[in-house]
Image (cartoon, rainbow, N blue to C red):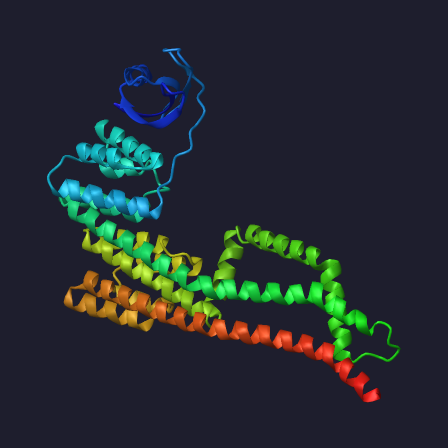
Length: 411
């Protein structure tokens, strides 16, 4: 039985879309007609697109359909529902079917039904998830594979749901914390540019009839205002083009690695990048090991979740050294790119046999430290932006008032 998406007309003439299971396109059309719906389009969710109004045989156009991608909140909800249903003793295919029925978004229903189709065809759950790498990454599939082999799929999915939820909440907190300073900075720049482009030219025109030489500050203000009025739009276009060019330029792995290496050496940004990647590495490694994934495989998967190429390569080197018999903490210390606290926690975990637990504690400590660093950095950004805006307005006011004071002295 496969999954099909459909588009049909109701009796009132309203277009209805949804997902439905069936053995064939013909059967799906029959089910739609039984519901008093006129099928317009039936799409095999896993293969080709079938078109035709009342043509029961259908016509295959073999247009590839783009696989939908689950959002973080959808992934968390689906994982939590599956964990609850499987832990209660429900078979996997029935748990998938129940989850698909409860899904509100068509994309979620389509993905879950496609996975159920693969499971019914005899594939394992992890193999079925591999058909959707955009929604289920290597870490997710490795944990599911370990849960299936150990017979503890329900608890493993519960851990995965908790991990996904925590990651989503951390990203949400970081984005929320960055909204205010970024809006403040953008508004400050907009106010300064607005003053220079629309207010300053009208005020400075008062001095245009004076034969006296204007002060240096005033002449600089006039030149800056004229430049913004004449070339401001071109500067904006050049900045956008430069941003796009840099993104294209960084698609090359060698140049991207060089840039990531520079980022790690920057004063504040380097610390934030290191802390965030280290926290992600420790949390992923702890989750994989506690779910029964072997250390070497867990190390390579944990390295892939890091966003910095330099740290990814360091993690791969660590995995190679562990494969050759070295201790994990020695290999991490030799890499010289992880926080000392994380290395010490790993050493403690290897000594007393509680490595997954120590990694979990280290991940929480790294996340707390990251939040503190970001809070301090963003907290300093707000007064710095206000001082910048105040200083710019002060310069504008002085540049306008200085020639007025000189004219009063002449009188």
